[in-house]
Image: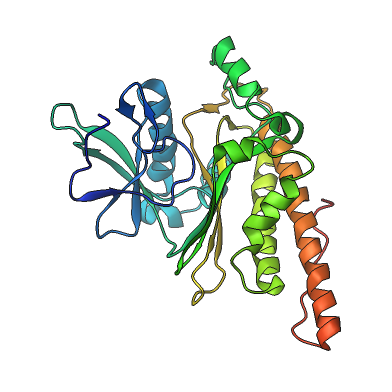
Length: 319
């Protein structure tokens, strides 16, 4: 997109984007195309389809679910183990409403966009890229080396924060972007996640419930990855979202996003996606540690104040 070009009047940049191609970035006189939103619509966002095989791969990923579970077909019983596994994964995939072509430049061809669901009023978002290795098996040696040096923590923990945005109906409280995320270390990564979980909710009870809800969903994803041998994910993210609007309940949602580097495993000897699983184990442990800290804080507060609502937790799969 030309640096001086403006969006068509019916569209605007999606203000809650925190990673990926950002419209604020200009390279060689060309503005990156970020996520769009059609004015007046709050239920759908528009993500640019990448060029070549990466875009084809991501569209194909979404369409495989649409073909099996779209519309009324989703009430049918799975036909086999693979379809059963895909149904479980479907619960963590943003709803796909097809593709759409939009003219952003009157002198060029239309651009193709994925239409994906959006459900929150004031989403507090954190994007975490998963895997010890981000470069897929087809990447060049140059690409692999470039990915390896981006974030030393990723090589130890199997994930890295791409950023977060925390907001209420009163406006944005804090935005952290990818450079900040790359600089996280073993010493401060827990603080970074705790910051995301606690900055909005007014009590440690609320923050505890948000953390606990994320743990439950992370464990479901972990159980799925332990069983499945169908897909391997590279450069894919987990998107953490909770509602920041004070009049709303602390609704929590975990989504898997970014599927331009997902590979089907066709052979009989296909293995688990250990690359992704490694990061999940460390991520769940981190969330459990934060939740336990919040529980201890709340119990201390209740004891100090002489009562109040009691919150409890249970051991979660040994993490």
